[in-house]
Image (cartoon, rainbow, N blue to C red):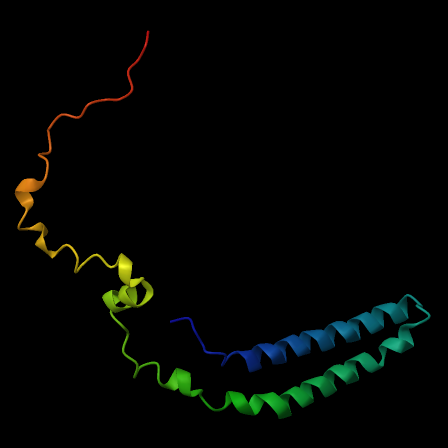
Length: 125
């Protein structure tokens, strides 16, 4: 219920770029106030960030308008049963369900279960 299938990424990317732009402007202002000698070299950073945001918007945001086929078909798919999953991922020699079908016929061959259990560990005092 919390899966958005990537639909929130364009919104998050826009906010990340806005925070980056704001931090670069703030950094430029702070270094200018402190009379940092190389602060003019920071001036192109906000413009590069804005250009990067523009390129990303033109190149990648169009793919977020269309819902992927995998997401659209999620409701159409039927979930496999647990027994078919176990059968698919278990080696055939480990599947014991068909080898011991006659257990009900030979119930008298089982040893009786006693009510008392014996303790192996004894205390030596």
